[in-house]
Image (cartoon, rainbow, N blue to C red; front, side, top):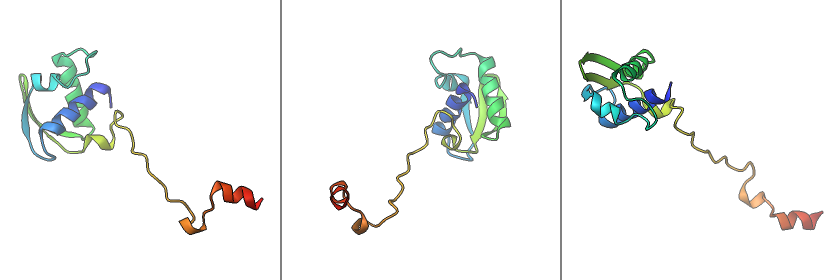
Length: 108
């Protein structure tokens, strides 16, 4: 998924709950475009088409500068802009069996 599509999907999911159709104006969705991206209707239609094809949104209709769409998937699940959370793995030994670094060096 490209950067513009990610930003548009984040905006749609911010304004509409999963599975609920909401009418968005092109201006609302242009606000989500990155600063260095060209905010044209062609780019917006391309992003909406890609999101629909990838199954992230369901587009009910598009009328001029208005889009009626519902988010289907959460964007953070597959978004390249989101970073995976760091998982803390438990230590393989219980705390009472672990030795401190000083204790290990004293044994040697």
